[in-house]
Length: 242
Ligand SMILES: Nc1ncnc2c1ncn2[C@@H]1O[C@H](COP(=O)(O)OP(=O)(O)OP(=O)(O)O)[C@@H](O)[C@H]1O
Ligand SMILES: [Mg+2]
Image 1 (cartoon, rainbow, N blue to C red):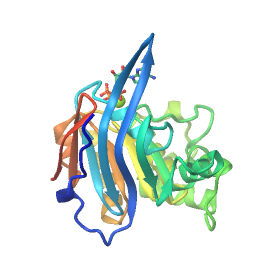
Image 2: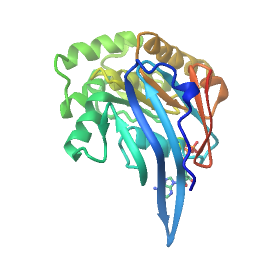
Image 3: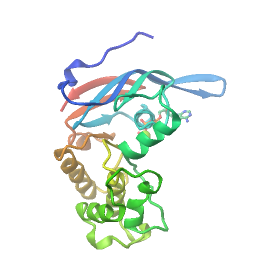
């Protein structure tokens, strides 16, 4: 397949640290005896401080791409550097450290642990990997305050609304002060007003310097981002400043 190029028009400030540098990424899945190409020659750069939305219809490969960006999955071909590390040269241990310390994940279905309260859910990632200087309990308390849940610290997930659950999940994503926040349809299970409140949290984080990649199929939600990448059938159809 023909190789394509990075969109120079959206790679505006080369003085900013490159968080993600992916070139000619593809992802193939074996379905029966057929190999199906889900991502095709995807080029994407994300620099520190960007708030990027990835849009596209259902099945276009958004989650597949996000799993690659979060090193939950490996591309079948192409080159992929995250925070200056080549994922094909790093050991599994090094990749697990990057995943645990430098990336905060937010999912559509919150993924909270039912038997843990809000503080314990937020602290959870630090049991596996903890960034130096992070006091889990203090930081969890502080983050839950930041997302407006000071009065829900000791509630379990089944005692929280969807919007509150997603706030806990966002606080959890931030516990290790990650370099990158990856969110896959973070408002997909929420009503419009609650979804807007969650997006206000993302906007505040972005204004304070966080780097965010958010997947959505909703154009109104993508409007919150300062750059939008459009995927269709595994190909980047457009990449533009919003
Ligand atoms: N493990 C897998 N094995 C085979 N095919 C897969 C696998 N995971 C995803 N696919 C296929 O890859 C395509 C893209 O899936 P993906 O989940 O990335 O889409 P999406 O854009 O996130 O869609 P949605 O908006 O519905 O979440 C789909 O056709 C899907 O069936
Ligand atoms: Mg998806």
